[in-house]
Image (cartoon, rainbow, N blue to C red; front, top):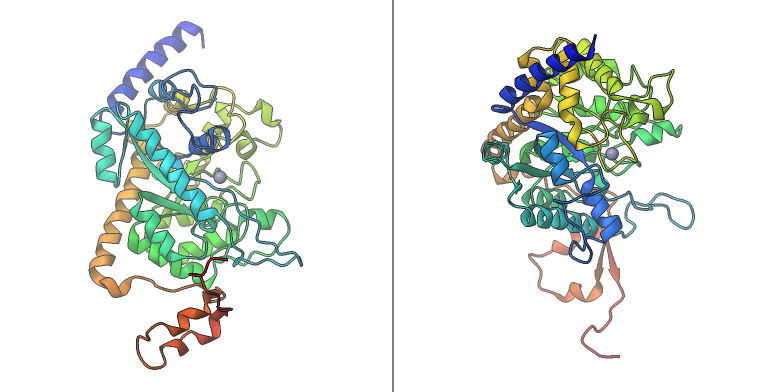
Length: 423
Ligand SMILES: [Zn+2]
C-alpha cells in the first residue's frame, strides 16, 4: 500500500475512533506508575522537580495519557512478595512483614497524585462514577492490588482495601501465599496446588464485596479452581495468550474457553517477553505481536467480548516497537480496525468488556449482600495463623465463662511485662 492510501485509511480510523470514544472509554487494567513513585521518590511528590503534567521519561504521564485518549486507569498498588523463608529454610507465612503498611502508602500516593492533578483525573469508587468522570472529560482512576500477600493472611484487610477503593486483587504475585499457587512456582518446577480452602473462601468474600478476582500471575490449576468457585466474572488484568508465547504467566486456550463461559475478560499484557513469537528476540517485538495476541483470544473465544488492554506500562522495562507508552493505544486500535473489526468489536476491546465485567461484579455483590446479610460476611482466618498476645490480657474481663477456651490451641501468651513502668 502506498503512503497516500495509508494516510487516508488513518484519517478514516481516526474519525471512527473519535465517534466510538463518545460512548466508550479506553480502559487499561494494569499500570505500575505508583510503584515508580515509590522506588524513585519514596512517594515524596514535592521533594523534587516531579511534574506529572510535564516531560517524563516514564511510559506514563498526563500529556501521554491525553495523546493516548485513555479514559479509565486501574493503577496497580503493587508491593513485592516478602521473604517468608525462615532461618532454617522453611516457608512461614506468619513471619512479620510490612506488606500492608507499604500497600497503604501506595494507595495514599496514588490518591494524592490524582487529587493534585484533579483537572485531568478523578478517583472513582464504582463503574458508574467512572463513566461519569469520563463523560466529564476526566481520566477515571481506580486501584488494583497485585497479590493476596498484600492482605497478609487477613480477609479483614481485604475488606478495608475495598473500603479504600481497590477494585481488583490478583490472587498471587511471583510466589505462593496461603490462598493460592503462583505461575512462577510452576515455572520453577514446584507442584501446582491450585487454590487452597482458605483461597476458596476468599473468592466468595471478593464476590460478595464486588472486588474483582484477577487471575494474572496465578498457576494453571489456580485459574481452573477459581473458575469453578467464582460467582462473578473474573479478569486477567495483564496476561497474554499462551498458545503464541509459552510463558506460564499467559492464558492457555482451554482457560480462554472457560473465560468465555464465565463471561470474563483477558486484558492483554504488552510486555515484549509475554508476547514474543518463537522466531523473534524480545527487542524485535512490535505492536503487530500485541495485535496477534488479541486476535488469538478472539479466535479461540469466537468474539471480541473477552479481550481488553492490560498494558503493564511502567512495571516493565520497555514496550513493543510502535506501542512504547500510554500515548499509543489509538495506534493499536487502528491496527485492529485494519484487521476488519466492527465498531461493536472495537468498543468491547477498548474498554466496554472491562466495564461490563466491573458492573457485573457490582451487580452480583449487591444481590449477595442483600441475600446473605451481615452474617454472610466471611470471617474465617487462616487456620495456621499464630495469634500472640501479652499475658496480661488474660486478666481482662471475660465475655462469658470459658471464652478463653474457644481458641486456646491457637493462642500464644507472651510473658508478662509491665508496660507502664519506665526502665
Ligand atoms: Zn504483574
